[in-house]
Image (cartoon, rainbow, N blue to C red; front, side):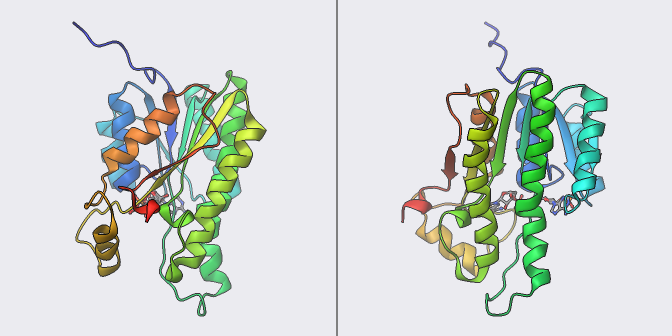
Length: 243
Ligand SMILES: NC(=O)c1ccc[n+]([C@@H]2O[C@H](COP(=O)([O-])OP(=O)(O)OC[C@H]3O[C@@H](n4cnc5c(N)ncnc54)[C@H](OP(=O)(O)O)[C@@H]3O)[C@@H](O)[C@H]2O)c1
């Protein structure tokens, strides 16, 4: 017997930072579920083209998310292409390791301009477009680092804690047409583990790192859920946030 169509079938869903790694995994998963995926990238054009091709020749949208004007232009192009938006996955982010005593204004802005400011303005632009077509679903990728404090990543942790509060506040602001939820990944490696990640994996109750596929499953859950699930944060971290 044929399996029933997924509830994501035919939905227009934009994934930011979809060229590589977790974003690519999310885009491929959603495309397999029948979604019409839009691939955003910043500088990884070749990888983005490959992901787009594997997503059934999905359209590509380039934007430097540091710029609110570029974000607005990207959503205009998206509306021009699809005429609607059903889902938005704010995945793109930056990560740096710096002793908080040494952080400069430029280091701080480098992280916050993408991790927090861009997430807010993508949510704003996305919500305007979703409201025109009856509503939608937003999933913000935060981090275990937005829940637990990491000393050499204080600036990153603050940006991701900001994403979690933004998720909760926008869930109230955009209800009932649009739900806003967050997935907080634990350690999701794409190569050999550095010593910091190794010690985190050792402390993980599941005794292993996670995969992009596991993050994508959680994202897909929120994208398909009813509007009775909103403002929530789901840690996909093998239980590490419970330690
Ligand atoms: N990997 C992990 O272990 C882990 C753990 C916790 C949370 N997370 C979160 O999960 C998400 C994905 O993680 P990841 O490790 O796959 O991310 P990543 O590879 O570090 O970054 C994802 C993408 O973000 C895009 N990006 C960054 N700055 C941009 C800018 N100014 N304009 C446009 N695009 C920009 C980049 O696109 P281009 O390459 O096209 O420029 C990059 O490929 C992030 O939100 C991250 O914070 C990851």
